[in-house]
Image (cartoon, rainbow over all chains, first blue to last red; front, side, top):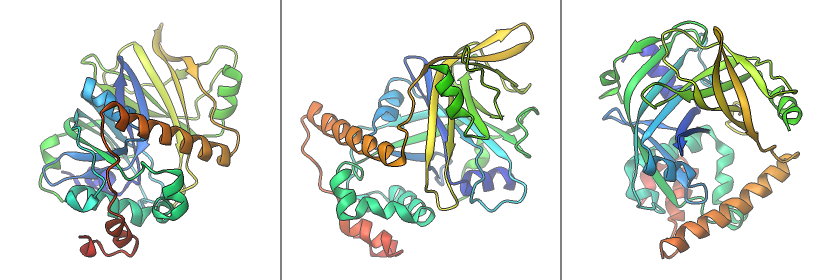
Length: 167
Length: 148
């Protein structure tokens, strides 16, 4: 995958993840992890299960990497990925059982130090279901790149195969 | 309703507009400084050529986080993307204002997530699974290798 698009999907702290609910888009900012097989891992707690419900009913999703805050890029671009998502029934409460989830959690906690609140006594009291996670895997179908984040310009197409084997 | 949405959306420099492409996949762009009309909940969308999109259900998301991925805020507006002559327009159909204070947002989130999590387990007849706090504490120490 060309370096600029790969850098964007790996370095941007969040992406805008869209699922479909009864045919209407619902978009949330989320953190994602590019896996070695070219899929993206996203996770949500059972306390915020709407993304999982939507994906199970309709797998069509998109990820827009467009917020360069904290990514450290001097000339940030944007990447849009359209794909098909799956979300199994399994609830993962022990992150050590899933290496991909461990990697995603390590990335997020390193980038978001305050998220350790969720492991504190008060965090566990207020958000008892936060660490009971559902795993959503997205297989990219189409990838678009805006090298300069100018969304008035036509995007460039990138081969989704280029996402494989780069991590 | 739309005057409140206009007030809130003005707090952000950009908005993400999402609609569907002809194959039914979501498709999103960022719109700089949307000129949201408080009278009718509409704003013009400059959709790029080369990115297929269809008239129909749409949504707007505005969000912010700081350099430490904290001080997060966001708003969402439901709507439709419509073709008017030679331009695209987002027309709002639903908006729920976030709580006025960060504390209010936080407490509402805690309440909603606790209810939803319990409901998720109850409807499936599942017991509350045990969280591996040791593994999470290892992450806190920056030592994933310690995870057991």
